[in-house]
Image (cartoon, rainbow, N blue to C red):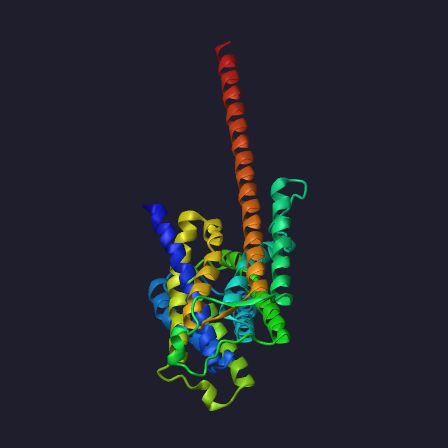
Length: 358
């Protein structure tokens, strides 16, 4: 029963992220400014999380010295504000399916940054070390393939997408090659920023262990930062208007559902099954996004994107497989040490008893 609950939870998480890519792309296609969208999204997340965090953890909140506050501020700037702003521009240049496909690079980039920071190690002569290196290589190949090779195009499932009757201004199209390449590398840069946040988040939690308050504080700081960016980039009042339309739906969904709902679910899955289990299901985001994009956008898919996505997924599983095998070996070695220590303890006990008898 527990296994089924975990499976349903991870599928729900990936479906939420698939809808996120779709709604975000949709909001941009109807003319919403990407930087304004990020501000509204983070503001909605802050308004949702703040009363919950204050009511549940304010009384037990650990102290927050100025030095730690500055670190949280910088981590929010790079890992959240910059990442989301870059993702917005990248999605505008490409497609929802491409955004979902490049999300498969996140675990690999996170591993690579952890390696550079000395938090991970690779034993080149071991089998699992070779698998990790192959995984990183496959991911690089996938990104290059998506960026520089298109090949033949084909349209998924439907010739008339469902939303066409309601939003006539949306037309399925492929951006020019130069724009597409920029979008791919912007998505990659956004994942690097987000991976940087993931790597340092663990260290931050050691200094400030209140998860909910830390998340809320980062949302608040990123709201302020993204507002400054948005007001600098655009001051046209029309860009700030929401109304009862897809813009409001996208902002509310990303702020409340993505940040609030998936935060709890991901924490629960990691606690029950571990981070590797959650990472293994990342490719489902791409599957769900492609299916939804076919019905909503009637999206045009290039063969290069399909091949690149397969390479990305393959690279992801290679790295995760190598990581899992490495952890198994470390656990086995630790168990052997424990067994040896126990055996030595028993032997010493027997020797002491014999000496006492004599």
